[in-house]
Image 1 (cartoon, rainbow, N blue to C red):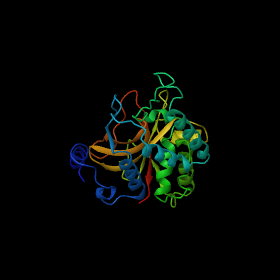
Image 2 (image 1 turned 30 degrees about the horizontal axis):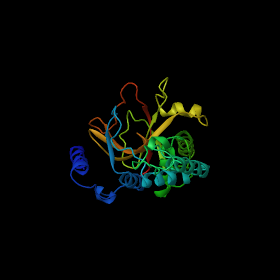
Image 3 (image 1 turned 90 degrees about the vertical axis):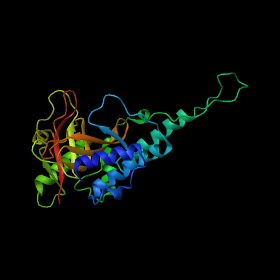
Image 4 (image 1 turned 180 degrees about the horizontal axis):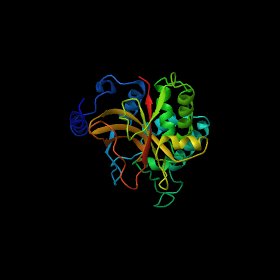
Amino acid sequence: MPPRTLALFLLLAACAKPPPAATDWGPLPPLAHAALAEWHAWGHVERQGWPAAPPADTAATPARFERLLGYWSVVPGGGGVVAALRRQRAGLLAPPLVAPGGPDAAPQVATAPEPMSIYGQPFWSAAFISAVARAAGIPRADLPSAASHARYIDAALARALADPAGAAFLPEDPDHFPPRPGDLLCADRRQEAPYAHWQARLAERGHGRPLHCDVVVRAGPGEVAAIGGNVDDLVVLRRLPADPAGRVLPAPPGESRFFLILAARR
């Protein structure tokens, strides 16, 4: 689908009618298909580039909360996070013992859901990638479940370097490689001295670093559409500007720098 057609499609989907099923986007690699299905489940929130204002709907609906717990359930040690988040929510939703109007007044319980930002820590964007990778059937040897992006990126790099002919993902430079659906587009969230190239990560493998990856679901001249978790506290599709060759343009100053594409083997 050409990028202008994609933009029109997304606009109509957001404003005129419910979004189409994931299968209506045409044939997609399993990872892109799994990410798109999650995006639909979260209400198909869409963002253009790097907007300053948060989206209008950030409510922690029961369905969104349960999906968040599902992401944590595939991560080693995630069961403890699931239990902690359930306790946190139960405490927030418990009715007050004494109503504001006095001991004889009926308890007043808020009807509007709390915002998802309340459950934003631990950060869950890597758990989201882990969950869609499992849903897509990607072997853990190629992309393990992890609570941090750095951990599964290190594993993917090690696998690619040790067995480039058999690895499911190969590292590419976003400045020169146009991403395709099913690829992971990764950024360094560190503002001071961010990675200029994915090879810089090799010297720091095993060390923590604030990284972030999204799943590319549509790409072409002028635009790359990618879905990530814990973006504005939701699962969000971001439409990123690309050059005529389909290479994602550099992020503006103050935003996370793209340094790696984990290109899915075709």
